[in-house]
Length: 238
Image 1 (cartoon, rainbow, N blue to C red):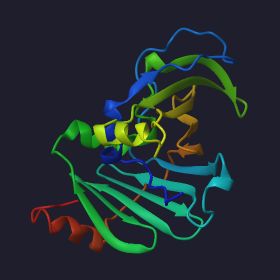
Image 2: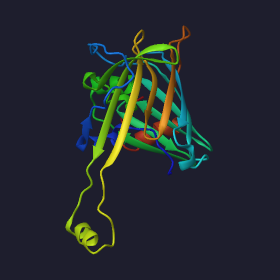
Image 3: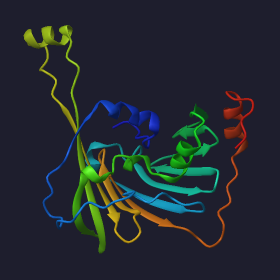
């Protein structure tokens, strides 16, 4: 498996063409779907650690495997660190930019966002892997790690594009007809806090620890990340 880069908005865009199907709920207790936001946004001054476990470790390179994510946010900055078997990457959300590095490469890659205050606050306070969590995918109440949780589940089905060349290759016996690609996701949300307890999908299990310490979180965008943004927007200010 190639290095798994955490989900970002740019990578999630193709999911717009996917078909969402509900997974039959088996073990969760029946319960009415909750109202309001299923996942509580991370407030200013929040900190989090996410332990990451491969669901099928034998199918991935342990050196390239994501093992942990750590993050903090303030009113105007968010900083995430991704730890792998070997190496790490960083991701900053500042102003209208996503600024990130990848394992084994210190080059900062800037991605500009539209200037939208509402979307900016959403990027500061949400986990991209949980963007799909919504009432239609609610399954009921289930206990996870001793915590009463709301269970959400979804299946995404990718229909492969079949053109004339592929059909000819199938007809001649050179290849087999491509089949649908199926992705399954589950999320457990604490009923007391509305924060995530666990997520499973894309071959990984995430286990969340979120806190809001009394001591104020202090973040400062490093100069090399600032410089990367300035090369695109000379008026950038974090």
